[in-house]
Length: 501
Image 1 (cartoon, rainbow, N blue to C red):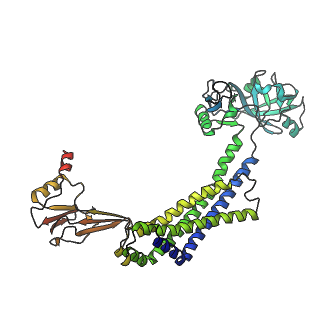
Image 2: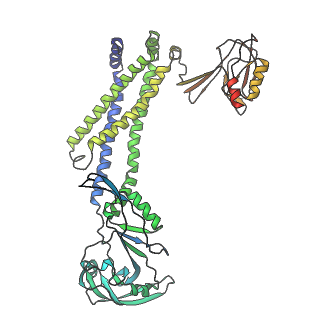
Image 3: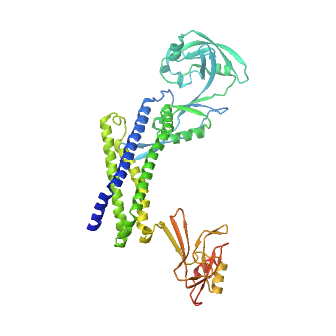
């Protein structure tokens, strides 16, 4: 950038300092609001996740089978995890290891009405279930015969029950028939596992419910702790157990994350609106400034400044304002953090990450906002700037038909005429005709034009030769020009004809 351009840039910065300062203020406000509000959302999300505890289960997965679905005996892999060899010749090599299910058990869960409310009781095979391990039992024993009931320690505490207590209950089957039974407590658990249920023998459960089909399947996997791709895990489980519900230790945290995403989704739209507001405001100010400077830009182009140099001057004006605004936004955030230290500190929020993310978004929306005025300044001619004409970004000019029908080509060759095709929709011409039938035209003279897409796209049709307009058909847009000299060469459509043959 030479000295004259450098001087022009400095003088423009001083002259338009209030407009550029307003742009810098908008960028500063959008940056600070997006960082502070985004940090608040991220902080709330992180802190709320930390407060959600995972389940403590004596199994890896418990499947509540749907309808008449039978327990599975063969299982798909639940995913894979990477294992890195620590020593030996293959040290550092990673291997994809599948996460498999090693063991599965079944249970028959029934709902029984007791004096203490509705209980879900599990029927298990005596002496065969992992849930009847001695580590879970505190006093007494697990059920071995009909009429025996084992309860978790929480039930003893909540309902003040003891071994030997008899509990009357009734069960209502699918047909509405009520069955009455009496169970005696034979054991009380000591483990603090979550979701523990009272237990009876499988024989008792089948007798009470009148069904032999288990409706719970308990899965054990030695590598389940390595699951980290939960979408794949859920997909595998849904394939194996369509329509069933399954429970695992990390489920509360994952469900909470999904819930938080849904809750914070409007907040993300608010952040987007902040950037959109900034972009629209910057665009409006830039366009107002461009309109006020049209005569200035016309004079500069008349004096010989190139479109590239003019674009660079305007770009650096806006770029300096944007950079100052972004720096001011960072300072505002830092000042706010010093005033309220707990706002972003000690919350797991990456301030640098927020600055980077929102800085890139600010840059993207800022560039989108200033791009249109910069392009207008670059493509505008001196006449368009001085006489308030439309300034299209894309201009197309035609002096022949791009892809004419074969009968039109034959007509041009036989009659020795030139043709143009105007834009016609439903028999109505969208092109503005400047030269009507019978009027003379000169080579390169504009005979029709059309502006579309809110003035962004401009098309011109040019006369391909000296002559006069012999006809114009509005039905199909055929515009025929009769040359003054019959020896005037026609447009070479030979390649198009050979390609179609």
